[in-house]
Each structure stands twice: as structure tokens, then as C-alpha cells.
Length: 300
Ligand code: NAP
Image (cartoon, rainbow, N blue to C red):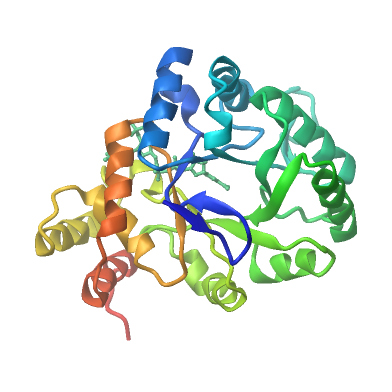
């Protein structure tokens, strides 16, 4: 399932395992080790982290415990992580949350991630969110140092608009190989802000976060998710597949952009459904039925 990303030398599994909810899975280290091994057996070898994931930001270090315990795993997987979201936990702080893409902060945070994850290198490092105070030249210096030292192999961004992407890329000698964005039948924003067409033109494969809208498409809780859920059931019947999550992943995978969906479930059977979706191709009518349900009206 390893797939070349954006015509670069980097390969990631087409389905990526997200680690943001790891703290909610209630797994001890042995159970997490088993989960990771089962995930690798399925061909899902890429794991998406961020420095801030988990209560007390512990997801990276819990994962790192497994890498320390089982030395077999590191060479079999690709680790993606991100930074720039800073939290102030002090109640007297001026602001609870802000972004920091200074060279010093990026380098220090990557050093911390390496330590937490018990690894010498990050396969793919992303700027988590566009920083209004971003200085592309400073980011370029940080990326260059991290790359030169072998601490980070590849770089990308997350939640960037086309212009933000172009601005940062214009100062880098290193190619940004992905933009990790929210795309699902529930979240269509990037079809409207030109990102999808920009990425296609640049031949950049995006990663899609919250592909199931955080589970909402399976357990609808508003009119829009109800409509989409109904359409998913109709498409599922049309192609004789029972599991709606297969249809959702295949909606993403069927798009010509070459999206890498990030599954957020901690249940191996649900990840298996994401993998099964690789063999399901929706036709245009089925794809548009889901899209139209999300819009709530027919296309013009
Ligand atoms: P998701 O796959 O849309 O949602 C996962 C949630 O849906 C889990 O709580 C899961 O519960 C539930 N779920 C899955 N299948 C279900 C089913 N059949 N029925 C009911 N509930 C179901 O993805 P996500 O966790 O929101 O995001 C995925 C990853 O994207 C994250 O782990 C993170 O790596 C990344 N992310 C990135 C950003 C960014 O800004 N770059 C933002 C958010 C997330 P169970 O665990 O019980 O199955």
C-alpha cells in the first residue's frame, strides 16, 4: 500500500493511521503495541502525530514507549508529526493558544518530538496551522537545519490556503510535499477555496483529516450529517456494501487528486474498512449523490 507522495521520493501508506485520539482508546502499552503491529500487517504503515495530541500532549510519548519496547517497529513505519500550536496552561496567561513558527520554536519542538517518540528522525514534518506572523525565511532556515542534520526527511504543511502554501514554498529549497487538510463529505471547504485545484495543478497529494467528520457521518447529529448518512446508505445499497465507512473512504479515494485519508479510529476492524475502500471505486453518480446530500440542494 506504500504510495509515492507528490512525485517525491517519499512513500506513505495510502491509508494513514491518525494518533490524535490515542489517549481515548484506553490501551496499555502492550495493547497499543498489538494495535500498531496489526496496523502494519494491514499495510497501514504511516502514523500521524502532532506535538500537542492527547491530554497533557502525551500521544507522542505513549507511542514512543512502544517504539522503545519493540525495536522491530521503527523501520517498518513512517512517522508524521507537526508543530506550531502553542498552549498556555497558566490561567493568568494573556491568551490560551497561539501559533509559533519561529526557527527556535520549530527546532526545539522537533527535538522534543524525537525524544518523546524515541526515534532519531521524523519522516515527514508539517507546520500544523498557518501562523499569521509566519516569516518564511525563518521557517526555511529551520527546515534546512533539520534536513541537513537528518532529523527530518520530508516537509509539508497543514490547513494552508494555496497562497499561504505558495508563499512558504517560494522561500524554500526543499519541496513541500503535502498539505494536510480537512476533507470529507461533511467538510467541502477545500473544493471552494481553490485548494483542491491548486494542489492538483502542483501535483501535491493532500492528506485528509477527519475523513468521517470525527464519526459524525456514522452517528449523525445535525441535518447535514443526517442527509449525508441517508445518501451513504443509498450508495451502499447501490454497490452492495454494508459498511458506510467503506463508502466514505472510497468517496475520498475515488477523487483524482490522490488523497491520503487519515483514519482516526482506534478499532482495528474500522481500519480494515478503510483499507477495503481501496478496492471500491465510486462512479460519478454515486460520488455526486453524496456531495449533493452534503450541499442540501442539486448542483446547478
Ligand atoms: P475520523 O476518522 O473522522 O474520526 C474518528 C472518530 O470517529 C473516532 O472517535 C472513532 O471512534 C469514530 N468512528 C470511526 N468509525 C466509526 C463508526 N463506524 N461508527 C461510529 N464512530 C466511528 O478522524 P479524526 O480522528 O477526527 O481525525 C483523524 C486524524 O487526523 C487524527 O488522528 C489526526 O492525526 C489528524 N488530524 C489533523 C488535524 C490537523 O489540523 N492537521 C486536525 C484533526 C485531526 P472509535 O475510535 O471508537 O472507532
